Picture 1 (cartoon, rainbow, N blue to C red):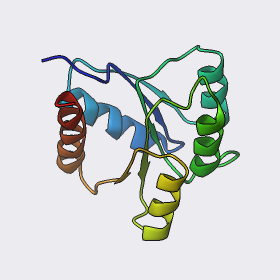
Picture 2: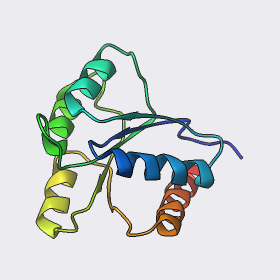
Picture 3: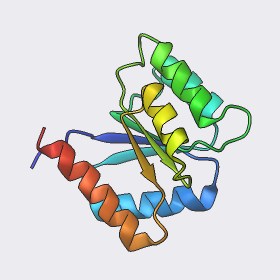
Picture 4: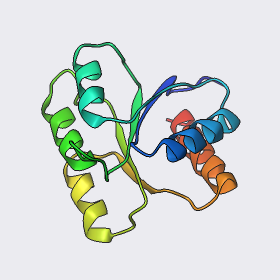
Length: 133
């Protein structure tokens, strides 16, 4: 079965969350490559310079220097980057925040699950949904 998303970029300043995401991603699909960055400003620079070219970006909202919403706005106004799907991956489940990020151009919003197995399930569903497209 072909995978639509071959390279996932995770932008999250929480090192533990990043490690858990990568471990769950490896269980969800061995066919997917990934990059993890902990700084949205650095991520924007690497994306703009084509140093990294992901098929989808998972983005935390609560980060220092440049938060997730600021990053999302920058990506969506950049013609070279605006077509990369961005999935918000955050601890918040605040409806107005979710709505706002979708208005800013986020493809989806996933509230970080509370346990590893649930995260694996969420990632499998995300990847499998996209296989059908």
